[in-house]
Length: 89
Image 1 (tube, rainbow, N blue to C red):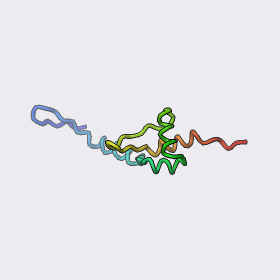
Image 2: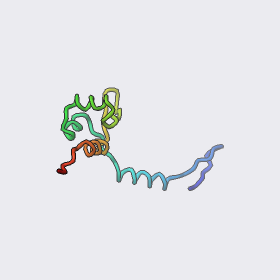
Image 3: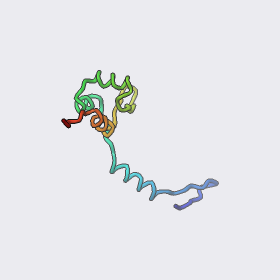
Image 4: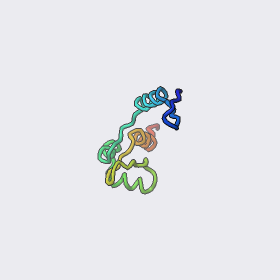
C-alpha cells in the first residue's frame, strides 16, 4: 500500500487490492432478473411471487428504480432448490 500526500491530506493508494476485489466480483457476478424472467424460471405467476414476498418466503427484491425491481439470479436459484420436493421414494 502506498501513501501519497495530497495538499494537507494523505491519500492511500490501494489500487492492487481494489483491482483484485473487482476481478473476484466479476468472477462471481450475478445477473439481476426482472419479474417476468423470475416468473418464467420459477414457473409461478407474478402474483404468486408477490404473495410469497408478502409472506417473507421469497428472496429479497433489489430496487432498480422508482418502479423497477429485480432479483439476484443466485438467490432465485437457491429458492428453487430449497422449494423443490425431493424425488426420493
